[in-house]
Amino acid sequence: MNGILVAIEHWPPSIWAREDEYAYFLALIFHAWGMALLVGGGVVIALRALCGGAAGSMVGFRGLLPVMWCGAALAVLSGFVLLVAYPAKALTNPIFAIKFGCLVCATLLLRRLLREGAAPARSVAALCLLLWLSGVAAGKLLLHTYTVLTVS
Image (cartoon, rainbow, N blue to C red; front, side, top):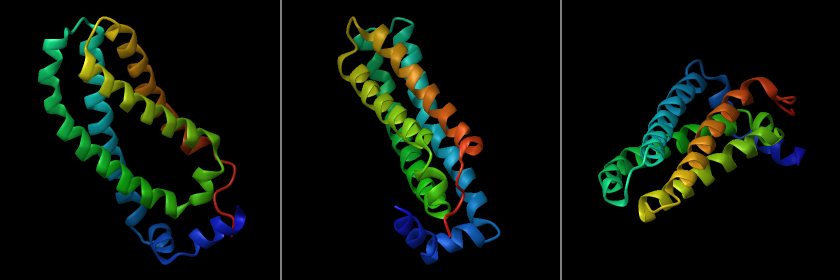
């Protein structure tokens, strides 16, 4: 595993993201914006379903999906820059996997909410909301829980 991490760390885009005066911080800003669009839309939809949104009333919230897709694209692209800048920091930390898992599961549950919008929507919405918030919290914990910054 260390060989792969070293190879990523020596990759020119990785060096650029780590050593350029602005690259890493711009990636952090874009990642925050992307996550705000993605998670913000997901939280709004989950809260509407949690407060008793019927199937018909959830249809209007599908308009948030293009905004959430833009946020997801921005978060993924900027997250890739953050990941290649310090691959060992993320890939050796189990909280990174928790963050990723929470966000993927929340997205899948949100999709179910928008498609079905049926009776179990409240429990699904509550779980979805918990997963969105857990994913964000795990992302914040990544800043403070890493044990390895670089391997080279």
